[in-house]
Image (tube, rainbow, N blue to C red; front, side):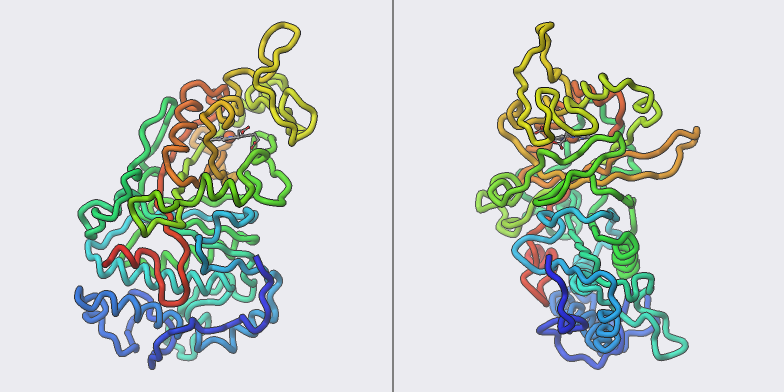
Length: 446
Ligand SMILES: C=CC1=C(C)c2cc3[nH]c(cc4nc(cc5[nH]c(cc1n2)c(C)c5CCC(=O)O)C(CCC(=O)O)=C4C)c(C)c3C=C
Ligand SMILES: [Fe+2]
């Protein structure tokens, strides 16, 4: 993460082709004053050129607003910028920001070229949102013009916004010619014991994880990306998360809604990221090298039941203490748990079915995952119970890492009495983009 210098504000995308357009021609906009007809934009043979042009069009819309953006930058209350371009996508290794908006889309078009243009537009727009720059005019010059940008994050600054995109296994069916690019290790997750999945929060084609220091900045980016795609993709579900329930490098450990420190033994070092998170040359699909796989599980907590449980049992459920977050065999949060230690009664101090005993790499063939979850609440349910839980997100170089841990947890985790997995998705998260002109999925349209 770096602090934005004023020079960064409003900088147009490098390599953007010149165009006489004014503003950003969002889908459904009344006119396309860009010199590119809709037919040309979506014609199969010209799809790559159109995708390239779409990147330029979005970029040009930004270039024309550079003065406005500089003004925005000067007033920015939070200057933190996370670089959008790089070897890996931002929002994975990035120390978790405080807020999440996750949106999962169903692609509605059957046209590969329309999909390609959407991904190109999204990629260019994401780069700009990451810098706190609106895409399209918030207040257009012409009275009859529809604002390109919805405006609710205007002047708020980038707030360390990261936007991370992934493709579900369904994208590799027969629709877009991507079947040959499907990684051998990539398919829908298997059913697990104790699953209570609902179609409402399961599946989908593409996900975008927006994380930021400010919830409105994250929401604005997602809202405008959805708007940009409205003739090509619809929203399947969205989850707003808060109080990051995971810790990254150098961060204090936050608490989940059960009151426990969550993220103490998360992956934190570059070595661990290389070993467990980033896809390497072992992949059968070169387009995934530098990428990762995201597992998203919407997990409801039975909060009223949990809140009625006595503290010794709560400790036994996790295998840790509540206030300090220490393993039951230690006193400090970062003490190494001793899963073999027995008390004077001869029983294991950390029960074998405690959450951490089942999930720990020591008891799980050495497998680790990067957890990046968030607390969420959806208010109350139909019978007046608190509707809240953990939007569990994990990144791993192979979905099998999650599967091996969840197989154990689903079968015998003591925590299962208090939680329900109601949503599920797995997404191939490509590597980061190299710079302006590059876009998500580019290699898959070859
Ligand atoms: C399949 C992976 C996991 C799911 C699903 C999961 C759900 C879940 N976890 C908590 C709370 C805590 N988890 C903790 C540790 C922990 N959890 C997983 C994996 C999943 N959790 C792992 C790999 C670990 C690390 C285990 C270890 O090495 O010791 C902890 C303890 C603190 C910590 O190390 O982070 C808590 C607390 C909830 C509430 C939850 C579902 C709602
Ligand atoms: Fe956990």
